[in-house]
Image 1 (cartoon, rainbow, N blue to C red):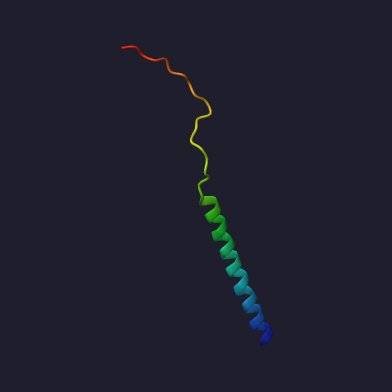
Image 2 (tube, rainbow, N blue to C red):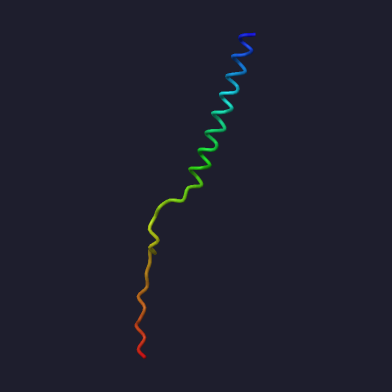
Length: 50
């Protein structure tokens, strides 16, 4: 009975750890990186005279 209880607790802890790791990975991948919104290439526009 003792070994059965130990095996059940081990399986429960392993599954909880796997679910926690999966949720953590999803949270990390879903986070938006903080980066400046500056274009790599900018074109100069000629000023229009009116």
